[in-house]
Image (cartoon, rainbow, N blue to C red; front, side, top):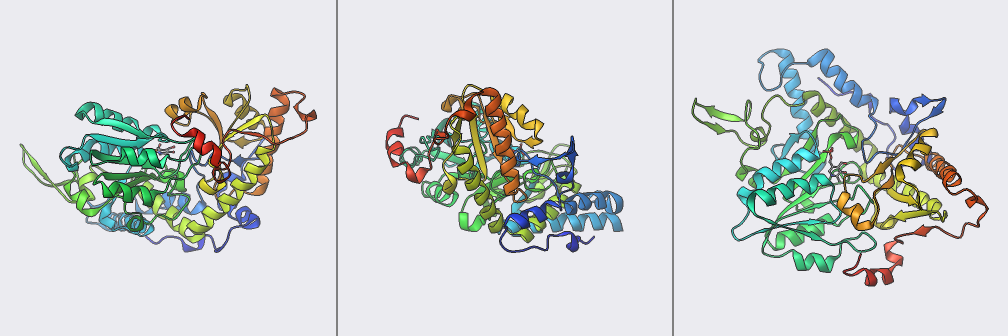
Length: 453
Ligand code: PLP
């Protein structure tokens, strides 16, 4: 079963507007029209569109190679097993890891749940604290709350400053020899802030904590090399990076995976079974009980090949250009409050509110323009509460977005302003109410924010 090389993008090198527009053609759904208008898809942090090569890899699996993996001794089972194992090797290379350090899960949520149920076994004696940050998605919060309840760990949170950046003084105070687990996001899905994952991993390592990275919003957008980062575990979801839904990855250092107990039990993960007891295989089998999401894994392998052909550095750089352009446009609108760490410190996410208007009302006006954005708490309720809002409108870019997409979004936003703030057009645009200015330009706020968000 060979992958379809001619379906991978030919364009390599820097992405600019024409290249992004060209790449769009690989994504059938982006050609769809609703009410004769094209879709402007800006909800990529929720899930991404799928290129033809991924759709075809899944279709080909079902049409030609469908048989259970790692079981049958006949040709099509061998084919499906080969494709499945190849996908693991592709993902391992993508992260600079070894294939047996890659566990396939349902997604980032399952990766974090797997750890929350098993990691206690490798926690050092006398360590009683789970340290998270105030930026976390519920998936990197609630499983730890449950572990804390079950096992009596104390939960602590690294504070964020007014610019949504981690307060490193607070981090250094809280990350100590009592820290068992330090789990943090690489990119905030709600406000786009990037954290310095290599630095955080190093600081965690220095105090002997187990370091875990929620890379759900990073793996699709930036190069991740687990050896360079130096984390113990890292997890992400396939559907946010062009792959099918229901498949994700948990990376773990080999020696640590060797010490973790299984998370689920059943077929495939065993070495030997008697009626009374069983022994378990090694990683990754030990963590992959039951028939896996075969078509999902194979589709994810194809998605990774596509991303590598486009180039992760090119992706980050183009998304940053889109973000800068969008920030500039949106910050000119004084009815809009933007929540950002600034383009320098953010991935391609722009979160905002309009004064006095519920985010849902804004997004429903956007829908008239086929501009797809997310409105709500983004599964970060504690962060929203800290910000004093019920939710935000979130625009999130991917490499197939263009300047025209941003312009259409801004047009829809201006329409929403004219609906909810009639008369606003007559006011001079003096510059928007940016709740959080670009971090580098806001040293004063940084001082003020200490201990007081
Ligand atoms: N972590 C972050 C930062 C996310 O943005 C998400 C999803 O939005 C998740 C974890 C959970 O991902 P999934 O729902 O694919 O498991």
